[in-house]
Length: 109
Image 1: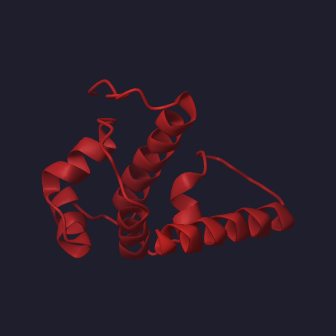
Image 2 (image 1 turned 45 degrees about the vertical axis):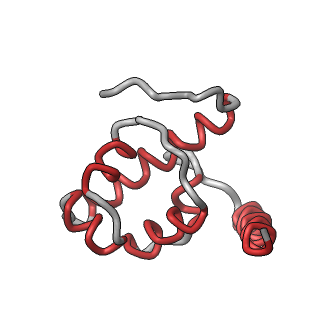
């Protein structure tokens, strides 16, 4: 596995990218998709999916995370949470609401 390129990202961002990478790989394999197939659905290069899954951190837009989530049939929040995350229903709702707020802010930038 390639070592993460941190590019002076705060540790929280590095950890977030790792959650996304792990969840994308796990969901892709669960759905029996190759990296190439996922890349075609999302509209990116297979090498980009490979780099993401192998912990090579790149700048990633929230819209890209959204495309990955849509292609994998999950919500964006499902890609951001740590593996095995098991919050209460209220906690999940609050997390999704916070994420939706972030998406609205991002859309206005």
